[in-house]
Length: 420
Ligand code: EPU
Image (cartoon, rainbow, N blue to C red; front, side, top):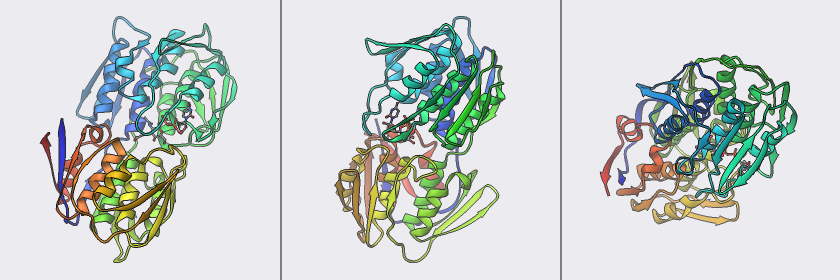
């Protein structure tokens, strides 16, 4: 297992290019199951999660090849409709093969993903939507068994206690593309990654409108064809580099970014004292002399994303004053709090809130990454801490950030990987 070592104290300066969005590419790869024709996806980041999805596609009978950021998916000789526990349990996003498999093969057997360190993460909304399309669904030995001679379009409301579901919307939207008649999903997730999936499906011949809004309408078609698509830039990676500029007092120009996907983050980061300059496809960010504490509440898009909560907490941990961070998507996504406190942060968790009292200095320490975004928050804290921070279990970071230490090093960071 690798660990990451960071020596803090360098102001990060220069340019960084953002990779394609992990949370867009994973369901888009699953969508290739809806056709027998070849699909070519560009701007694909080289991430562990992407490689896992390619393994899943292969286990389902596809031929999937990754080369220089381009994935080509073609059909093999034998299609399979069973997604195995061994693969699905390593990555929740693999559950979104359920909708495409059911639509294409009229039956599917997909392992239930189970919970993970950021929470229980149920799939009731996925199943509710597929049932509304007429699927017969049962759970047997940890697997979802789904079948439907013909899926039929329907109206449905896909909201749960924490609001809309990203992968739930993806799963149902994909199934509905091949259903008979019209489907309307109310309280659909509005995340740009969902809209990117809908755009890809439309290139395949689907008839989807309303993507990016809470009401998505899908007019079912008989057949989907192969398509080519380029993945949108990763807004969470871009935002992580925005925080890197702020926390180190640096000056970073971020390339291949969609500022329109970063509204809530830009709002909060400007409130905390960022100076931003936008030009076509680039965003330059540096802090004013004094940073200010800001209160942040995570919400479904266009609200502040839960996937940036941990990184924002690192910034607040070194910003003078008190800030309150409220997590409304995954109330238990606070594993990073104890690790940041080991570095000298003063953060107190109270239910879904973290009360952060900014300190003058963090000190490097051995810390442990618990999930992808927690790892990013520890790396950011390490960039500004005095001395050396060693982050173990760094494989979490490799699930979602492409070439992270190369990109950070190119900006001047002293960061390297070691064998544990
Ligand atoms: N929920 C339900 N029932 C469901 C599905 C979800 O109650 O059937 C709840 C969840 O427990 C959570 C909330 O609804 O409280 C939102 O979960 P959602 O379904 O939107 O999450 P997801 O689709 O499983 C995606 C991202 C996550 C990101 C969330 C929220 C992918 C591959 N994953 O997960 O990304 O945190 O949306 O925006 O798209 C990450 O990249 O680090 C990451 C965890």
